[in-house]
Amino acid sequence: MADDVIRRKVAAARAMALEGGPGADRGWRLALARAANDDIGLALEVTRLAIERRSLADLLELVPERALIAVLEGPAEGLGLIALSPPVLAAMIEQQTIGRVSSNPPAPRRPTRTDAAMVAGLIDRALADLETGLEQDMDRVWAAGFRYASFLDDPRPLGLLLEEEAYRVLRAEVSLAGGVRAGAVLLALPADGRASPPVAPPDPALASPLSAAHFAQALSDQVMQTEAELGAILHRVTLPLGAVMALQPGEVVPLPMAAIGHVVVEGIDGRPLATGKLGQNRGMRAVRLVPETQNGTLAAPVIDLPADRRMAAGG
Image (cartoon, rainbow, N blue to C red; front, side, top):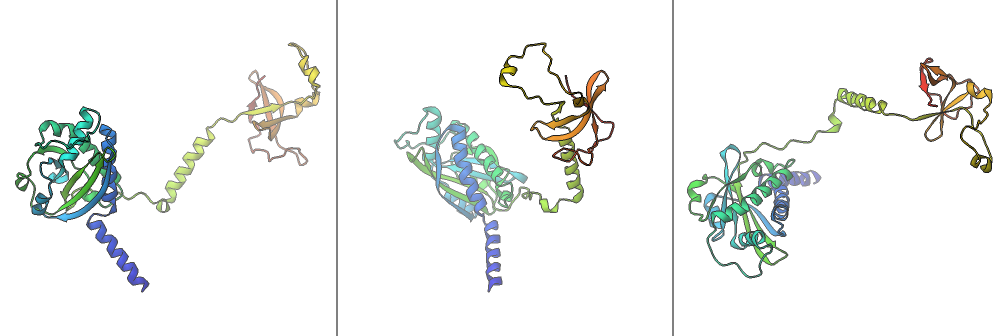
């Protein structure tokens, strides 16, 4: 019983991928809304969207009356179309010309080349966003690579212009400017995919040990080049606050002679890291690190450095 359920789910997933799955559905909804907002500042919401497989004859019957028809060019000389119904086209033109969408219904008219020029950028932006959203989705095979090519104000030449083949048709009902206007947007692309398939993301689990070693070495090289600030502590003196406030430039604070032979190297957090002896190297104050004795006083293990390593200790 469990095997049968799994088989049915796998079959359903394959059918969905072949017939236009949720990738294209989500992608086109987001692409239309984002393109309208970013390109012309028009609020657009897809209230309903259907994905269908249609013949060329069926497609010609679906184009809204007096719609602006944008012919699209895609991979392998494939042709598709986007049809903007009159309310949608009018809202896009009004947003760009008067800065708002009128609540009055648009006057019936045929779309013009000027209309097409004003919405061509938005169309390309929506198609590009759809393609980007499907980089890891099988719907990319049929939905990617199309851009605006030309426009028609009459659907009749489509029967001669488009190839006699099956088409994926996305019919969207959209709300514009917060519900001031509503209309339809139709996208039709060849059903047989012509774009390159999606590239699967690399699986970290399949990474070769060699590449992992290279990454570890590169990371180590970067970390080891990071500067580390250390302090060489000769001696700590405790004085009353009054004596500290009374200190003047040039005064001498006496230090025990033993401090020269016992310098503690500390990190910026005050944690002791090593011990050493005060000396000189090329005219500079220097600290020579010395191995910790069996009964040393360090709170942390001594860093394993070569015996002749020198550390500058400013002053």
